[in-house]
Amino acid sequence: MSLTRIHNFSVSLDGFASGEPQSAEAPFGHAGQRLHQWMMATQSWDASGTAGVDNAFAQQHDPGIGAEIMGANKFGPPGWPDDQDWKGWWGPNPPFHTPVYVLTHHVRPPIEMEGGTTFHFLEATPAEALETARAAADGQDVRIGGGATVVRDFLAAGLVDHMHLVQVPIVLGRGVRVWDGLEGIDEGFDVEVVSSPSGVTHFTFTRKVPS
Amino acid sequence: MSLTRIHNFSVSLDGFASGEPQSAEAPFGHAGQRLHQWMMATQSWDASGTAGVDNAFAQQHDPGIGAEIMGANKFGPPGWPDDQDWKGWWGPNPPFHTPVYVLTHHVRPPIEMEGGTTFHFLEATPAEALETARAAADGQDVRIGGGATVVRDFLAAGLVDHMHLVQVPIVLGRGVRVWDGLEGIDEGFDVEVVSSPSGVTHFTFTRKVPS
Ligand SMILES: NC(=O)c1ccc[n+]([C@@H]2O[C@H](COP(=O)([O-])OP(=O)(O)OC[C@H]3O[C@@H](n4cnc5c(N)ncnc54)[C@H](OP(=O)(O)O)[C@@H]3O)[C@@H](O)[C@H]2O)c1
Ligand SMILES: NC(=O)c1ccc[n+]([C@@H]2O[C@H](COP(=O)([O-])OP(=O)(O)OC[C@H]3O[C@@H](n4cnc5c(N)ncnc54)[C@H](OP(=O)(O)O)[C@@H]3O)[C@@H](O)[C@H]2O)c1
Image (tube, rainbow over all chains, first blue to last red):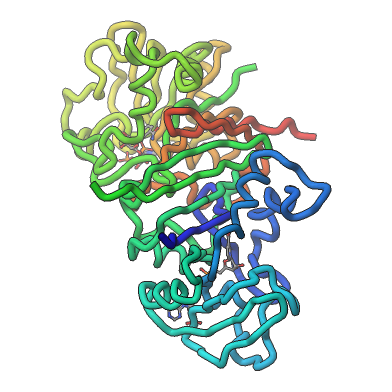
């Protein structure tokens, strides 16, 4: 069965998955790199990095994934739809290596990159986007890549099977909140929690099998 | 040195320390007992309870404390100032056994209870209240007992030396938020994090010694 998975999704203590304002110079706004330092310190990011629990979680990002769905604000900074040459943050060979569906109200033709990544632009409901991505994933799982808005919308629509969320013990104060409108969402999941010596806490949400 | 401490302060994943609406029947609103189940399952609450990490933290609540400061909404449900007989939720022998300073705009004469607890009612800034409580604590520490509003105000005023915060993996969606207005508050603290097999996560905030 093809699952819908979220990985390495990092939030502050106060529930923000991005700071503000987002810009080309500061993709995460005033959060800087604080939300992802835990990941950049692991072997999955840098060969000389750590090999413990943070790395074990980080490495689950790719295996078994056949397509990603991301939001317009993950794909580029404000204004990217006006730039016909914008091809994402990730250079000529992006780290996805699968079809990637960018949810946006500014659709454009697909962009084929090196290494197996093709960006498709889609105006669709979460359920429709998932159906499209799943067909492309060819039996493999679909990753919801963020940002907060898209994660929230997929959770609200009941479409998420597995979510790895990483809480970083910082108080951002402002940015994009992930939990708004999701009262009681925990009831549909089994939740496992483990803290890391690095200071972050890993939450694994697994959708309860309907009884 | 007399410290200002917070213990067993429980918040949801989305940062609420109480649900809504608060009432005599539901002191925590729609949160019910979900924020404190972890504590009620320990030996410190019930002799047949658990004796692990949750209990170790829960037991730090009392030793070394000479006075507590709490908010008006912890002391009683909406409307308690209109009831001249209201003496708190805790019966004739409340579990504080020290002077307790209730911050309120509805001051009344002190109420002496059994077992060493006396409720004092105070309209004062956090710093003034702390000075008063510290004088009464006779060299011991002062506990900030909550709720969220009072914890937030004492954090914002830079008056907290030690905070034990317990995160419960539920999404309350509404209630009283603790982190609002506290952007960057983590920078003044060393933060240690440990998850418990019960599913909650214990955060220990220790004020950084000024360098
Ligand atoms: N913390 C993490 O782990 C993590 C992970 C990924 C990204 N991020 C960060 O999060 C930020 C982006 O998050 P965000 O919440 O601002 O935005 P986002 O979720 O990336 O994108 C939201 C935008 O996507 C478009 N969109 C969403 N659903 C749509 C639909 N059904 N149909 C058509 N368009 C749709 C809309 O943009 P338009 O109307 O403009 O087209 C919407 O404003 C960035 O800073 C990124 O770096 C963080
Ligand atoms: N999660 C936990 O661990 C925990 C711990 C303790 C309590 N709680 C719960 O939290 C809820 C109460 O929290 P809350 O945030 O609503 O309220 P609170 O912090 O208990 O009390 C806030 C109220 O205290 C009074 N007050 C505060 N500062 C004052 C000052 N400097 N001078 C004068 N009066 C002042 C004001 O009331 P008036 O203007 O009406 O006088 C204010 O509205 C309750 O449901 C309680 O059961 C949770």
